[in-house]
Amino acid sequence: MNADPEFGDRALLDELAALLRGRNEPPPEVLDAAREVFTWRTVDAEIAALTYDSLLDDVAVAVRAAAQPRILTFESDGLTVEVELDATPSGRRLLGQLIPAQAAELELRSAETVVGSSVADDLGRFAVPVPSGTARVWLRCRLADGTVVETASAAM
Image (cartoon, rainbow, N blue to C red; front, side):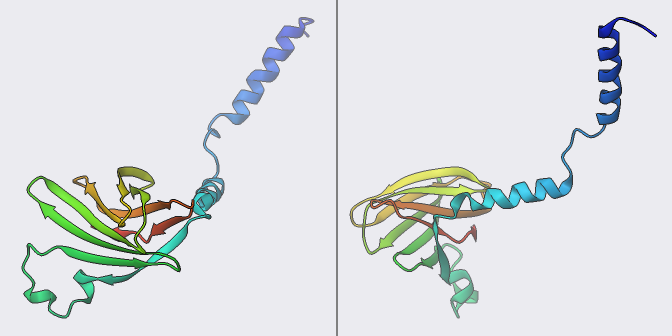
């Protein structure tokens, strides 16, 4: 037996390291729980549901010109967000209107990342560029009174 206390500590640490080797990743159920908790970060935001999409709701979809903009309407209890998705030579953009008209800070989000931002003027009008390659987005609106409204996500 070795009387050196450091040797005993080293042996114990080596044995512990051997036991833990290969267990650096958290179990899948822990990752799932963490993802679920992460979704609660916007629990204070009111969700505005998609109530109209010209791509889906127009009867004459088959005869629409390809260059016509897509119109989307999102509604919550206190706010309606009307959005037009335009394709321009310089790229895509969202033109929108908040109803009732009011100033607000806007973030265009995709996959938990802010991909664009804008400010709605006192008449509720705004424009937000949509980066190329963006597939699903939603708007986060922070109104002057601190209320946060997020639109449901929509495929662009």
